[in-house]
Picture (spheres, rainbow, N blue to C red):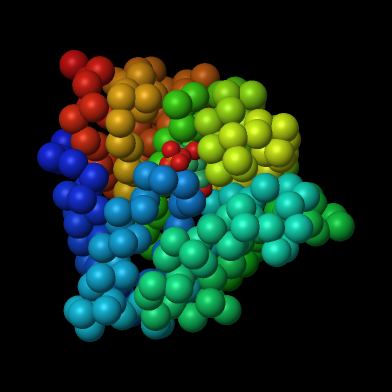
Length: 243
Ligand code: F6R
């Protein structure tokens, strides 16, 4: 695991975008794994700027989201599908039809999870997976106690995660869905390169457990220690609990 402590969010954005660009330079049809939330925003901003300057094209890429809320209607602004379109797809030349997320309104949720796993496999797997980390140590929505062998499935969100995400729902925790579809820990570990971004002191304990703690389902991100190619991009505050 390579841990890189950077001066601030903009530098994190540049180094994260470099990682994506390297994969795309090697293979213009690279499969990207996309996270939602605030952590990857500077990476997405930087990717948008590079595409606008014609330094980068994502036109041949395909992309898979990590997770989705269960039950939010398709036109709800906070579905992860809509969030990723606003935060990334509208600012780059990715084909919107090539961006796929699990459908949180599917009639058969377990069936949807199985076909999502199959779609990732059919695409040849994810080349570079962007990740954030929750204060609980979750990656995607694999909350503490998630099996390290888990695949895409329905999960219950913890109260802590719903409180953290209430900021996207007008501050109303009750408006945050209680369930999600999420790639499993093992699904994430199948990606060839993991790039995790953590910013701010609220992530410091989770970052410490991920990098220096024992591998444990209590801190699901600690499973990244088992992966051969992980890049962790931190600002000073997120790194403040590292030894
Ligand atoms: C979102 C996701 C989550 C977030 C995590 C951090 O797709 O998978 O694991 O990455 O909750 O969220 P932010 O970046 O908003 O602090």
